[in-house]
Length: 215
Image (cartoon, rainbow, N blue to C red):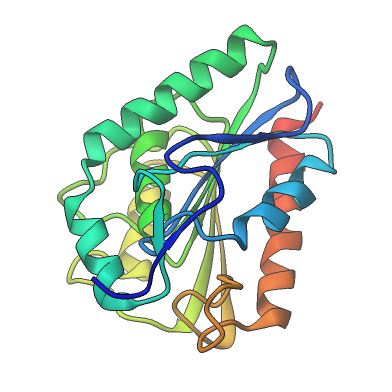
């Protein structure tokens, strides 16, 4: 495996903001918990959220797609969902009454799966959907930040996913960022990063969370 990069807090969830504030769980993409997530989380925390970023790769991240695919294939999705359950439960004990999820690519898929459990008040997915075979009712509002140039497996195309959400009565907001590719918000990947689209997607995500998590 090439380009494996140890991250500053191996295997641990990192918290930002004040306990008791509305919780936002950020779920990393298939590249792992790369450093760019620190300023993303800090920016959200500065707006009044308790933010937590778990690490599902045991302290490793990469900027190499082949290595990322191997890490993703070794991920236990059920365990990842259970970790999010525990983080939410712990934060509720600290006073967080509302919960939002933000996931990127693989992390968006995990966030959408978790939202089906009914423990989230809002979920944001970047360049991610659910396929027909894994899609259940998501009982909270959904925001999708999608790249213009992307590929999805059959049955997981955004139009199909949005139609299913609407059929289930799930409020859904969809934005497509022109000229972008998958991972356009990942600031650790120079080849696909689009700073303007990333900034706009962050602003829209923060506004969406404010609407659904803040009184």
